[in-house]
Image (cartoon, rainbow, N blue to C red; front, side, top):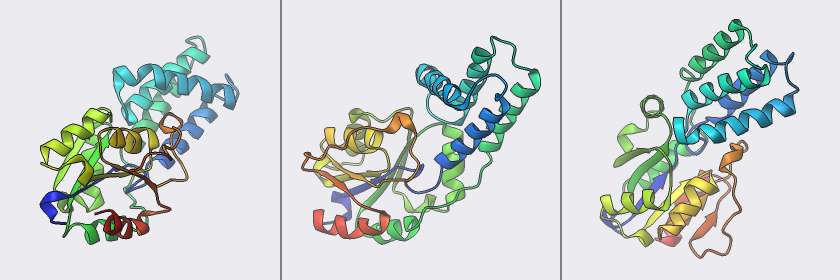
Length: 233
C-alpha cells in the first residue's frame, strides 16, 4: 500500500526508548529518604495516590512526578519533612530530566524498515520540553513524518492525528507498551492497536487487553512489527 495511504504511529517512552526504569530508581531513592517516616509499601501507595490526584493539574511526566513526591513527603511527615530531603527530591527530579536516552532493541531498525513505505508518526504524552529533548537525543527525529506531543491519549487524540495526516483510521496503526494509552483508545478511534509489552510499566497505564477486538494484536518485541504490518496492510 502506498505511503500516503498508511501510517504507523509509535509511542515513545518504553516503546522506543527506556523511561520507566528512571522513575523506579528515583522512587527507590525517595523511599530511602523517607525511611524514618513511612514503610515502603505505605509510601508507594501514598505516592501513587498523589500522582493520580495531580494528573489533572500537572499532567504526565517528570515535573509532575517530582511535585507529587514533594506533596507525598509533606503528607506522610505531617509537614515535618526536613528541608534537606525536599532539596534531594528536587535534585532527583532534575537528574531524571538529564537522563540519557537509550533506545530499546530493534527500535531504530524497525522504524527505518517501515519508513520507506508508510507514514511514520510519533505520538507521545508528557512534558513538552522533556519529550523534545529525548526525541532529539534519540537520533530518530528525522525519520518521523510528524510528531505529536499531547497532554493525554484518548480516542479523539488518534482521530485527530489520523485526520491531520489524511489517513483513514483502518489504515493507521498505533504501536506502544501501554494498553490504556496506546492500544485501547487507538482501537476505539477505528485504528489498529499493537501492544508491545515492556517489563516495566507504570501502574496507571495498566488495563485489560482488548483480546476480542478484531484490530488488536500483541507482539513480543518491535522485531516482529514489520512482518505484522506486511500482513495487515
